[in-house]
Length: 199
Picture 1: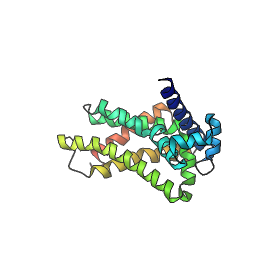
Picture 2: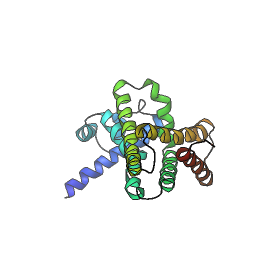
Picture 3: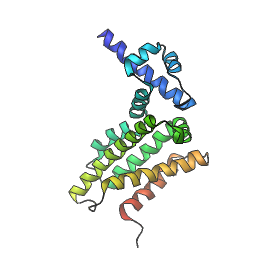
Picture 4: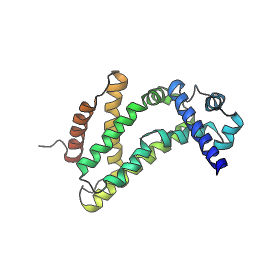
């Protein structure tokens, strides 16, 4: 049991060290030696647990992004009115982006120069995020709560709307989004998303 706990703790320390360093220096600026050093282990231990830097990056995306939160929210809100469910998802998405702002900012600046392997890891993560939300929209469609639409496209549209708002305010304008403002904006976004802008 002790050995298993130690193994779990080592993995957690490596993931946390990777997240911190990527937030500070970016994926491209971070070495496995630095990650191992910050986690208090050897590089050999790092590779024993994860095999490669790419694999570490993939696990960091799974743990420190909105994906695990979305997976936790959906089962809890699936029977709530869509307005409430989507509002909670959008607010939690904004909160997560704000908490991970350092990583988001640096990843946006690096995106165009990522090697193919890393680009594929990132694309796979985005696809899983979209697929998770589209599963919720599938449920709404099957119940007749929403029209028969392309739920994959709807998911991309909803996540994109919220992300673009965060990016414009917090990153481009360097302006802090308050909770009150986020609630107001999310209310409008959800209304537009569910009802459209027709008269």
